[in-house]
Length: 127
Image (tube, rainbow, N blue to C red; front, side):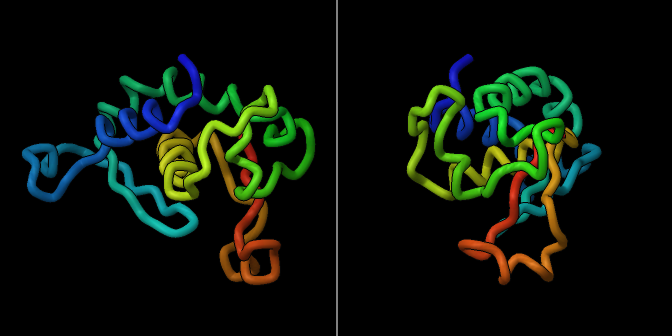
């Protein structure tokens, strides 16, 4: 599976619970991202966990916890091969929200400190 905007959007749509769906009664996971919040079906997130992790494996090694303090969200538009996979911050955040839902990522500092960071956004750390 290749990291593309289409694949991120597909997984996000597949896993999201809408307030009008019958899945509302199902157990859900709420993910608080940088700019948005999303609610996911717990079962759908579990079904797609390996696909989501595969997408995170396409990001540069600098995002990995074992390599330091992660990289800025602003760098998330480039894959591990140096190719721009998206130019859309919203698409990048959809991937962040999926990563939070599967507990695969974290932010390097609390939200109160984000205004002091470049672009007012945190580093993303892949656990």
